[in-house]
Image (cartoon, rainbow, N blue to C red; front, side, top):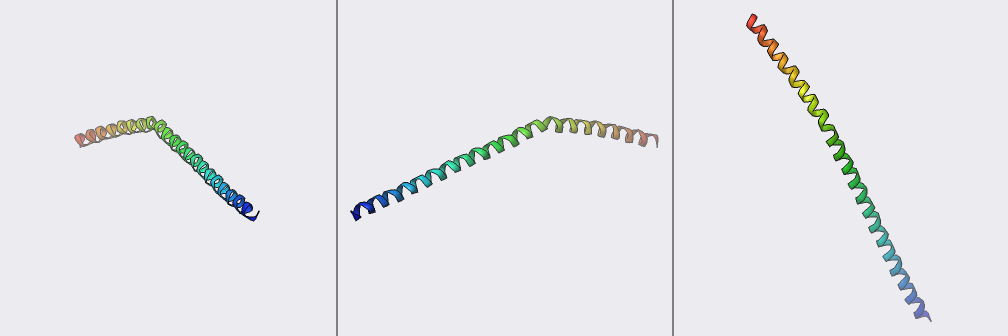
Length: 78
């Protein structure tokens, strides 16, 4: 009778260990999915910001071109 309780105890411990490992693996899988979603969000945001950066660079180049032309005119007059 005591041997039967020992066997049940060992089976219960092994079962609890297997359940805890399974739960840990599921938690890690969910963590990876969450991190992937965060990375996707950041990449989409970066992609959405590129047109603004390009427009800003074009505007700056236009202003810089006008400035160089104006400086050239003033030097020619001097």
